[in-house]
Every structure is written in structure tokens, then in C-alpha cells.
Length: 66
Image (tube, rainbow, N blue to C red; front, side, top):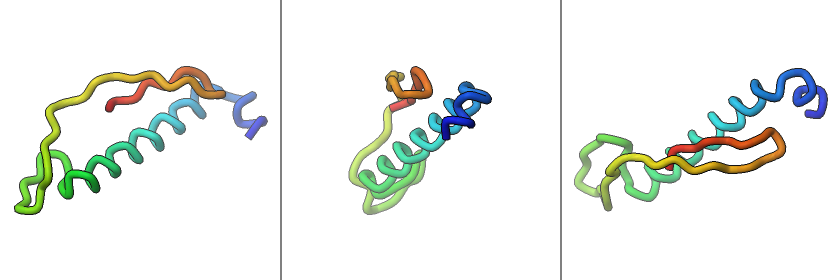
């Protein structure tokens, strides 16, 4: 991990951001019981857009869409 961070911190930062963003999207889909723009009978809510949030980690500041 240290070697990867030393080589290209921006690449690792992008990977971390993608993983975290995917986890957030999956969690929202599970909470609503539907994916983005999917219409189902069991849907419990709706998505009305995104807002940005920053997460400060060892790889640097990661911008996420909530």
C-alpha cells in the first residue's frame, strides 16, 4: 500500500473515490428498494439529486456525491 501511495497518490485517490461512491450508491438503492430512476411498487422514497461532500483521508481530500 505504501509503495502504491508513493508511486501515484492521485491514482490511488481516484480508486478510493470510485469505491466509496459505488458503496454509497448501493446503500441508497438498498434503502429505497430501487435503483436511480427505477420505478417499482415497493419503492420507499425518491432521489432528488446530489450534493458534494469532502472526506479527508490518507490519500488526500476525496470529493463524493451524496
